Image (cartoon, rainbow, N blue to C red; front, side, top):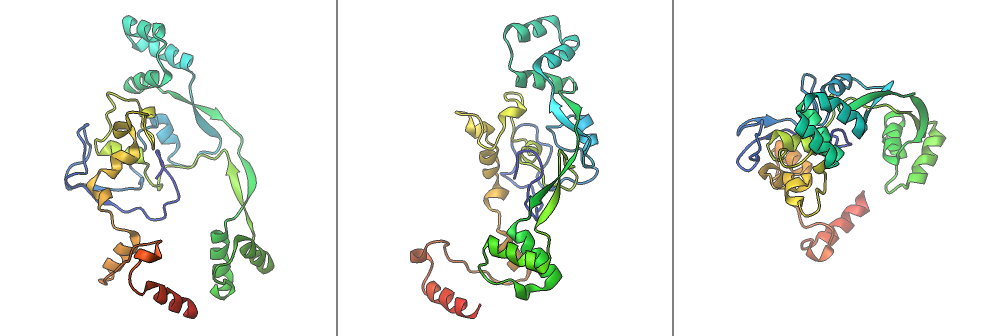
Length: 271
């Protein structure tokens, strides 16, 4: 998972809130609620975005990108909406820009601006897995041999007339609709983030040094009961088929279970 949204996770499952899933910082979910891990059309959108950006990114954004405003720009817009003492304190104490952005969020002041950009089309090499899927789709599976290296897959694709590159739009900002939710929004909805004490920028994958327990998104989510007891995709698929899955420890032959080496060796003779 990323902090914000998007990523390559192909299948995101829903999660039902139980004891141990919610925090104490104004959770928007309750016990029994189902949390979707994918943004849907009609959702409010990522918390880290301002409203104008959420609306603009309901579709892919091609002609503009949103960039952070400078500290001075933020102060100029904040001054009319702050009392004099508070504003003077910000200036005299040289408040960090993340604190100024936090005040802007509270007062519904846009802290990012739309900047016009030119979309460029660039060629990007396709991955070996992508090429394999395309070869199988167009020419069948019998062309693909076990343990083929990336260079071999590329040569095979060229011989079969399969394009080995793809067009990629540079400066394209993808929509959040239909994309996996980020760790921040999942944790925010559960009330795991102390946004009174910390700024949005403080919450990252690793968190602030010496404050990891409160600001590391990975640590915060890993303590939730549904993440702790999450079944693997393989286990879930087997259970849906009403079958039984028995697994031995992975990666180490000495603890992998009696006879497993012989089973692997026999399987490799057949497949």
